Image 1 (cartoon, one colour):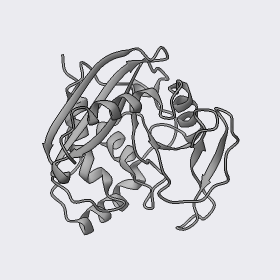
Image 2: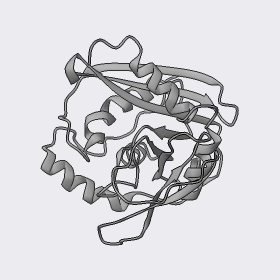
Image 3: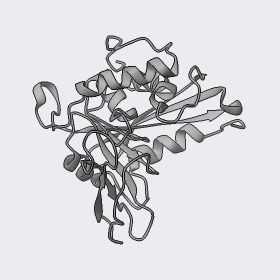
Image 4: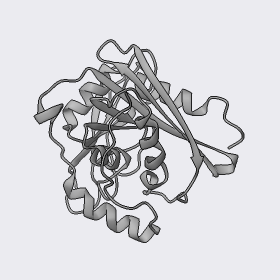
Length: 237
């Protein structure tokens, strides 16, 4: 049995200008409180990581989804999708380039996860609608953004130990100083990752779940495995 399909949220054949307008329109629909499982019950037993890589000079996208049980983090499924890249690279519009293929990859998993960890930002986005928000809202499931670099905001350096964190604060927009994410150390004395709520997850819970998925690597295990799968046998790129 494949993962369930969902009704389309919008069309994908948009210009960058229309995509920006859509981000602004959809940002208000994002839920940044904990609502797990049917009816909002708190139950997470399946976590998926998603990531995308590009080949053939960016003309082909390779989208990967890897399913693990939680909290054991034993892999239970994976899927890899290759398709022509349909949207140009535009800073701040990563989701329009990657999400369609990521949805296909998630649809190839045996069942829908209870939570998705995305290699990208969620609320910590200039328009508060990053890839994790877009994917989570489309599927209406909990999602977290775990990015390797900062897109917006400012922060202090977190402590050196695993689990140390600092708030990522908005430095522009309607609410300067708002907590839009967290800078989390997932391994002692390695570069931190940037965690933000995507959909149906609070920021504090997003940090706790990301740390719960961290093993001995910088990236949490779901997105680390998805990153590895998306880059396997990549041609050029």
